[in-house]
Image (cartoon, rainbow, N blue to C red; front, side, top):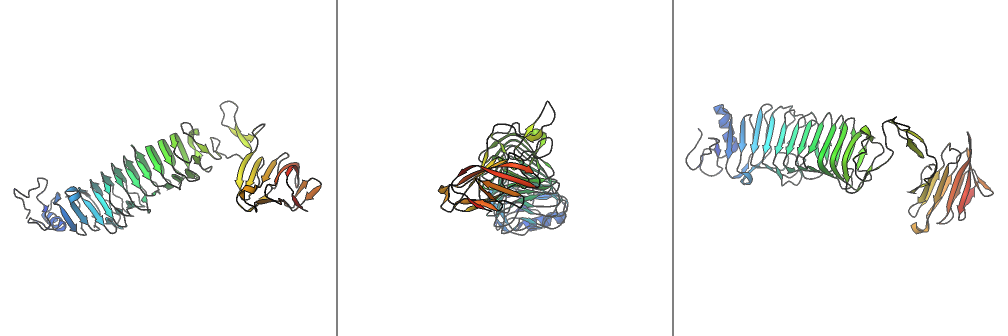
Length: 435
C-alpha cells in the first residue's frame, strides 16, 4: 500500500522511497514493483540517499530524485517498449547506465541528471530503435562515451555538458545537439542525420561514414592534432557560422562533399584536396587554404594548371601561362613535378625521380642546405628513356650533389616519346654524373 502523511507526502506520487528512514519503501525497486502490481502509471519519488540497485524498469513508471542528493548506483534493465523518464538524480556505474542488445523501442528521457561512470556509456544500446533524450545533464565521469548505437535510434542532447575519456560517441540515427558541449570523438554512420546548433561545442574530432548528413550551425569543433571533421560519407557536410580549431595537417579531411558559409579557422585552415565543394561554397569562408580544389566541373587539375573561364560557363583546367615562378617544397625525396623547386630537409640524402614523359620546357630545381646537416644531399635518378646533360657530361643513370649546398636546375629540352632529354640550366656546386 502506498504511504503518505504530513511529513513524507510527495504531491506528485504516493510511491515514496525513503532509504533507511521510516517510510513506505526502502528501495526503488520495491516501489517500482508495487506500482506494477497496482497497475498504475506513476512517478517514484526518491528521497536523498545512495541506492545501490540494478533496477528493472517498467514503461510508464518514472523516477524523480532530489537532484544531487539522490544517487542511484547500478546498470539498469529497460523495458523493450513504452517510455521512461528519470530526473534529478546522479546516475552512477562502474560500467554502463543502460546496457541491452535488444531491439527495443522504448523512449527514454534523462532530465537534470548527472552521470558518474568509471568506464562505459549512458546508453550502450547497439540495436535500440527508441528515442533517447538527455536534457540539462552534467558530467562527473572518468570515461563516458554517452551512446553506442548502430541501428538508427534518434538521439537528442540539449543544454548539457557531457562525455569523458577517449572512446567517443557513436550514433546512426537522427541526432540533435543543441546548446551543449560534448567531450570525446564523435562518430556518425549509417544513414544518420546530425544537427549541431545553438552555441554547441564538440570537444573532439567528428567522423562521418556511409550516407551520413552533417549540419553544423553557430557552433565550434575543437580537435587538437586530428582533423576537426573527417568526411567519408556520400552525404553533404554543411557548415554555417562555425569555428574549427585544429593543428592537424588538414582541418577537414576525407573524400566527401562540403558546403561552407562563414567558417573561421583558429589554427590550421587547410582542407584536403580530396574534398569536393558544393555550389562553389568557398564564398563566406574566412582564412581558407585549400589544396587541389574540385569545383563545379567535378575534376581535379594537374600541377602547373589553373582554372580558366570565358563568360558564365563552368571553369576548366588549362596550363598556366606567364609569371608566377616556381613553387617550393621541403622534401625528403619524391617524384619531381614540373615548375617546382625542392629543398632536402633534414640531415639525410633525398632521392628524386624525373617524370616519365615531361613536356618541352618543364623545369625542376633541387637544392640541399648545410644548415640541415653535413649529410644533407640529393640524387636525381633517370630511367631508360632519360638523359641528363650537365655541361659536357651526360648521365643515363643519375646525378648527385657532393656536398651540402649544391643546387641544380634541370629543363626538358627534348620531348619526343620515347626519348626525353634534360639540360642543367643552372648549377651551383660540384655535381657527380653517373653515365
